[in-house]
Amino acid sequence: MQFRPITPLEYFASLVAEDDGLALTEAAITVAQDEHPSLDPQAVLSDIDQLAERLKRRLPADAMPLQRLRLLNHYFFNELGFAGNVNDYYDPGNSYLHQVLSTRRGIPITLALLYIELAGQVGLAARGVSFPGHFLVKLRMPQGEVVIDPFNGHSLSREELDERLLPYRRQQGLVDDFEVPLGLFLQSASARDVLARLLRNLKEIHRAAGDPGRWLAVQQRLVVLLPQAWEERRDRGLAYAELGQRLMAVDDLAAYLEHRPGAADAAELLQRIDELRHGSPPRLH
View 1 (cartoon, rainbow, N blue to C red):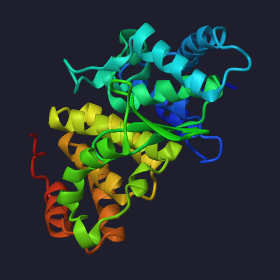
View 2: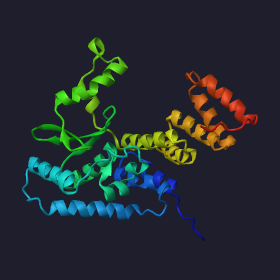
View 3: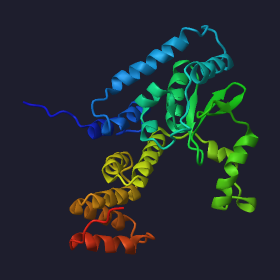
View 4: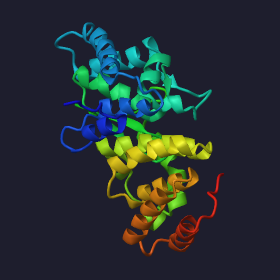
């Protein structure tokens, strides 16, 4: 019997099938396989492990958590030189962990993923935080929680976090009588939520660039990752439509409308489905 090689999307699906034991770092690495099909995720994991091993060799066996944190921060941000890519923030490569590992430049969420992986290997409890506008890392320490900006390594005080949050609060009307505690915005993100945020960042880059082929590749992963997020099915349908794949587009848009019949965009999408069924040319942006 001849076996068919597993596709990158099938590999990703196998990694995210269950919440328990979801291999976050490995799944995040595989996102780059759409652009780099020959990428070996296990080799990238090995590269990360080697960085962690170098750090572990420097840590005394009885090192206290605060000492471990200080050594990790110096190693990650100063010695290895990881930092935000301020010169080309919207480069898709900033979302690819193997490239971030190589260039030492990335966006908050990919820098956070590498930082969290190293932290875990030296005995620190670090988690990602889907803070509005900027992904953060928090560590549970004996003295309390420490919140770090992975873009620059800065430890954020409560006052700084409140200041960063204020524009979002105002935009959402969460001020005065409607204000909610800061702690609600600092809850740990699940592995699935972290991957969704990573993919949505990449999705917006490709969509803004008018690249429906790359957008569709990312959208396929979002649908696999979040099968009940019907907005992602809608967006996959729109990507199919841009590529002229009418039947696939109609199926996805119809599935969205079946589950979201009262959606604000329902009338517009019904018209779009009618255009697709009756052969109007695809609208390219």
